[in-house]
Amino acid sequence: MKVLVEIGQVCAGEARKLNQLYVASGYGTYPDITEAIAQREALLQERRPREDALKSDLKEKEAAAAVPRARINEENRKTRDLLKQRDDAVHAAGQKVEEVGAHAVALIAALPKGGFFSNLMSGRNWANVERLVAEGRQGSFFRSLMQAQVKSKLEWMNAINEMTESAERELATVRKSREETRQARDTLVQKLEREVAAADLVSKTARAEYDHYVGGSYVLAGRELEKLVTLKHQILQQLQDCCTSIETVLAPSDWAAMFDMPEEKLPWRQSNWTGRLDVIEDFLDRTIRYALFQYALRYWEGRWVLEVQALQDALEQNDNKVYPFKVGGRAMEAMYRRWAMLTPLFIVTAASLPKFPKCTMMEKGKFVERFMAGFFDLLIVDEAGQIAPYQMVPAMALLEESRCGRGCLPD
Image (cartoon, rainbow, N blue to C red; front, side):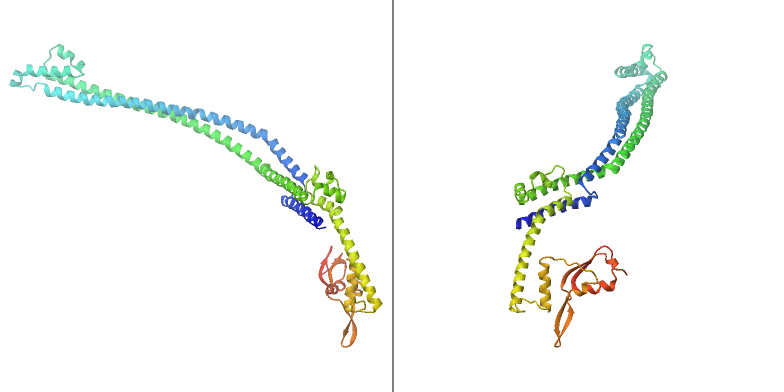
């Protein structure tokens, strides 16, 4: 019998765990959960073509945005290379200006200064000038003067000025070229940046539309689907744990031997087992609880036989102390407890109830009739709303606890 009690507690306990999962989820049965999962999967499946189309469109837009971005990177690289070339040219032209300036200063210093004594020495001075021209790299400006043997300081100064102005014009030209190159490249890059911004805007719009639609799918069905799938796994795990816990206490072969219950008829062994509490309760009513009820019947029937035998012996011996049988409180308590061994529930009307729980007691040398207050364990009032309070409230003094059925006592 201990095994029956233990297995009954295990079955009921595991079933209640499953029932708590169902109650917490808001779904009454396992099929309700699977149906809800199928509905949400169908909704997601219905939205998937649109989601795939938006995803494909997003990829196209992102790919289109990547083209001008890659081009602008390439043009930026070209701009850096071109500007470096122009900077090198400007640097070279600047160095040439400095070199030409130094050369011009040397030539001017070597020219004859004029005057009587200077003219006497001019041959030597002009030789120094021609030597400096030959050593320099600007001989083209003085070739005609040297070929014509021109000894005029003014004409040589004009040639020197032309040489320096030419170097300065060349520097100005390369600087202008650099600035024009920079402006042209900046204009091109700005145009490409506008194209990138426009493509990025299109891409971001597509991304926002895709994220909004996918987020809507998650809110509509995805979030609940995740919860339901998790709940389904929890229930399946609990079903497996339930089967393991039950069969750890009582093997399937023992069910067949004790209750004539084949293994294939055990609820947790059936393919459609979902852990419904009403199914396991019904199964326990037909097996373990029925067996325990029969054990209880036999026990209390045996106790009743012993009690009746003790009562009979007391009656024959007229000994109220050995077993009380008269109308006193002890005798009435013994009578009701003896009756309860066969029928623990007494059904009476509200009008008849005051007639039962009475006993005779000795008070001040006289026998008086008193109610047995606090004797009964529980009073259940069915349809209490149909009973007048003055009929039912006094009866509550006869028991330790009371409960009202459907309805309530009127105000």
